[in-house]
Length: 327
Image 1 (cartoon, one colour):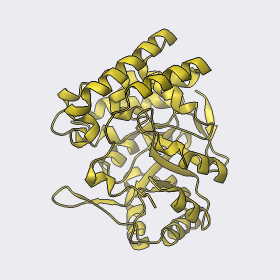
Image 2: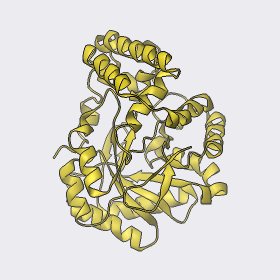
Image 3: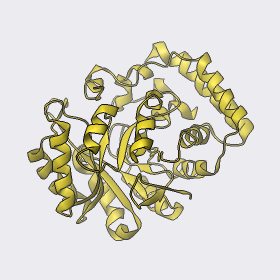
Image 4: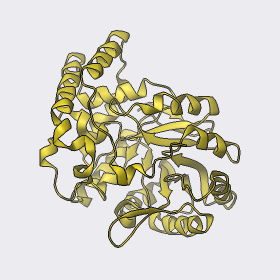
């Protein structure tokens, strides 16, 4: 495994992390036994940067992760998030207030079975709570010794700068992949300028870039069924894009997933993607992506492919898009 620094901190993390959400939330029926085996394998592979959130499985993901985290605490760097709450009708609301934060941190510490969380994210920016107030309260958690570093998720450049003026921000997490490239314009450069790590989630576009996902086979419990990118009107475009990526990967001697991750890693040494998986097979493939270097000609070939198939669809529906900070 290769390693990268977490922003301006002295933390040296695996260049690829592990997104744990899908083990308990969003992608159909959980398989705890395979998930535990995947977490244990991650340690063996040197993948030390794990990402979860209190909302994933209504806390079940943190509990699952804790089963491997607790006996290996000194080997791992754990990130979790607060803010989202689920109403009885399964709709999501967000609460970024300091009062709610204090309750959320205590609950996450208990579920994770740890005295301190390495990286604590605000899962979104709450439009009702000034960024300075929220980040100031997160800084208090650092002073209390409950959190080591703080981060933001799906925050705009403006919010990031406001946050950094109040307290050091170690990481900003947003979706970023060959199919979701908006952060290239402002967020990634701003993170580099400010000494903030950029942590891409869904670097494989929630499976679309693997060349193995059949969108027509998604089950009713899979939240991707409700996202625009997975609807029939975009299927042909996205299948051709994935097929083209697979051809480039085959010529390179790697998988489409590895090629897509290598591209993300090539966009800056302050970038630490966290591809999610609950299967050991895919975890091994993801880990090997750190050793792939893309030549200029290969990058140009990928750009040309993306230009041929631009109609990928939006990444979020209206219910999810409302929580993305675009200020």
